[in-house]
Image (cartoon, rainbow, N blue to C red; front, top):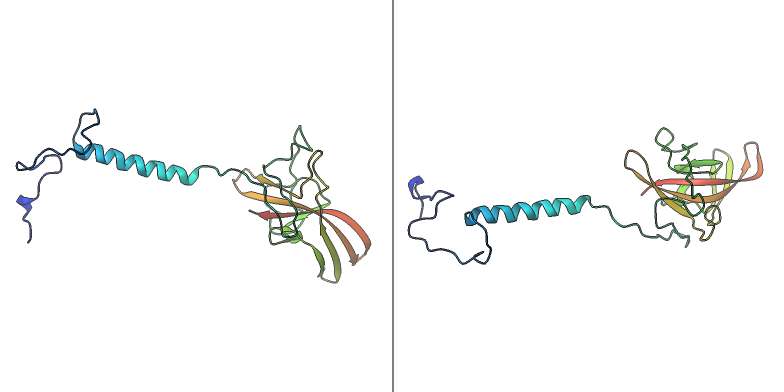
Length: 183
């Protein structure tokens, strides 16, 4: 069965043979049923789109080797008056906003799976012995990693560790190093 153009009812007028609907009859509003339904649909779409951009609550994370991360994006426990983030000294984020604080060296090349490396790694003839630590930041509760959001909205994890270098002019010097990874 097909309809002709004349048989299709207007969207704002009910057909002459229709009876009033009991749907939404309890609402004390004026306006057509279709207007109410459009408003409800628009409200649902707006709420759904808003939920996509609501910030998620911070939660503590546990790294690969049982190291615990900070459950907020500052280190006010150790630096109550704040600090200035420093740029990376190596790795993928050298020319971006600073995100991590302290450390002799900071960069993505100290990361493995988003957390500070653990174990022995070789790079261009230099042996690096990496060990994550949870004692570099924090006064009452020590943690291994913190999250910071840079001005461009990117969230990074800064995971602390110590690295001892051998070869290439190094004879066993140990430095505080920071792994910077995008979360």
